[in-house]
Length: 373
Ligand SMILES: Cc1ncc(COP(=O)(O)O)c(C=O)c1O
Image 1 (tube, rainbow, N blue to C red):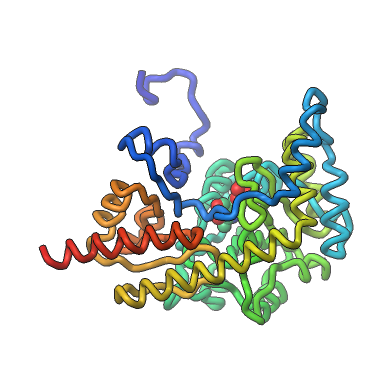
Image 2: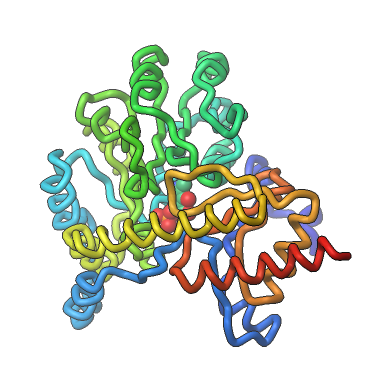
């Protein structure tokens, strides 16, 4: 039966929703092509794996999984509050950062409200807006994917309810400076919530970068998204959080399911938060790996965007899609730019030294074959 013939009608607004396309999983490519070696550089995961302290915490919690998890995630919120010098009431813990986006949309968007998204960026903001029947207002990033403050301000109307800013931005790796965010928060109407997605903040080293938390402490209408999926290496457990002034968190809690974050995820995230050594090593590996990719792209004369994150957007030209597909056949998964309407680009996650080296070698050979054709 086709959707059109179905008599039980789904809500009109969800017709606009296109299911999220994740980075191709390793097992899928292995099944499709019978490959033994598959390297995934497509979902910005931590190539060092999870924090050993998180693994230990999971082992210690296993015998209790017949119990429901703590619905209010008290330990984790307390740990975040002490670490970040904030109050536990300024946090909400979610089933990955993705859930925070949905909760923010459910709590704040009425049908017909507008949500500003900057393009290209993370697609889940649009999912949340469509879910609620809100209108998406897309504002393109500027030259070299820099943030265009004037264009953002110009796009704001009386109906704008949420402005999504991803910094460092996925997939470009560019960021919004602290002074520009401060200015935006000062001039934007106070009925507007800034959803500041700082999923990759721990990788950002620029002096004028902000993870947005100082503006939460100063009580601006800002909701900072954080995740344990990236530098903390816990993507498979699904845990993230939002930080915002208490009055905003209280609205989000109204739409949250009681047991949204499982017990193992809570224990692991609390332990990972305290694993400074894992964090340090992950950051160091990323800085070195990113350099490794930069040097290779320079040698191959491929333009790329300098990144404040754990991925690099590289321009592969007219053959980008074919190159992406040939990499897949060699067991290397990157993310093709078509997802973001960037058909000449690919986004490459920073892997371990050997993963990056394998990618560079295969890419070099593919480009060589194309050039002699
Ligand atoms: C910019 C950005 N925000 C949020 C997320 C959500 O992360 P998670 O749901 O794994 O916490 C991702 C994941 O890739 C992301 O790239």
